[in-house]
Length: 422
Ligand SMILES: *Cc1c(COP(=O)(O)O)cnc(C)c1O
Image (cartoon, rainbow, N blue to C red; front, top):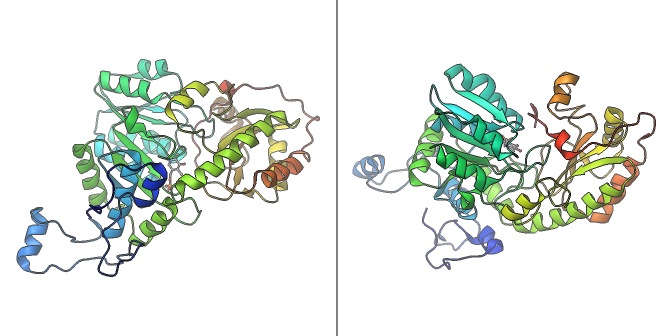
């Protein structure tokens, strides 16, 4: 539970991803955190058991409450985010729902990004509304939209930046200032950036959520979530809710994610270098109508991204010729890039919202939500740039781009909402 006292107090980002948090070595001197695959923990005596329950003695009780392997991951992620402490959860959605349950009560109002992760939006819209919590969804890339939606009952501003799949950016310091002015909390889903590129607490956020399933684990083989808070008070609240409601993380899951976390900086550096080159390549491709990547100078919030992120990440969305059919052709023609939802792994993944995650939404609502037919979401991985470029090129060239002429669209028109799937 305690960090190794021999470790230097200040560590840089690569070092932190490898050494922050963790456990002290046991008598065996292992360098990998052991998997404490134990549901419960023996008390030395009845008095010790009582002391642990009353909080007078530290020590483990039961793995839904605390587990050494899970605690090691919580410490590592909290150190990377620069927060007070972290609470691990079974999935990213268990982390999101725990934040809602921790801080929202009947009569409270939420202002949220309109293109919030699908399930995060659906909970607010269809589930929390049953308990008397109301939400206003706004395009949070314009701070004025947040400000205008604030009410006396607004308890929380919930934003994602970069947004999915529009890749728009929310000004985090600006959102934090609005939250502070109105006595509301700012919660940020930081999944698309990861703490390696963006630490919302530095900009005034109170609560940060990560779907560890994505960049932090990074290997497409495990689900997980984390809530990191700025204050001890908020930590205690989230810890209580996760422990009570039981969306706890399993120790084996925590161990796998710790293993992935150690290479987060290496993976992101490689993937975002690829993403920048691919965004530039896509911009010049005759079968591509538009490209939305925060690293491109013509991205509407490029300056904000530059100010609050240490890099532009590896998520790109772009529009292809020939609308829906063009998207389907691209999906069916990639050979190296995998056709799948999810993101942030070492392998490149591509998906086409209009024919997949959003196909069940009517055409009109979809267009209104900005999920235009030609939009493709691309999670760039760590393969060689040239291989990714060549794969995209051969697949794009199979699109019949000149049957249906599409008008060129601007980023502003590609804002998207909810992805019911992923
Ligand atoms: C994937 C994702 C989630 C949900 O995470 P799970 O681990 O799938 O439950 C939440 N927010 C964002 C931005 C995501 O990409």
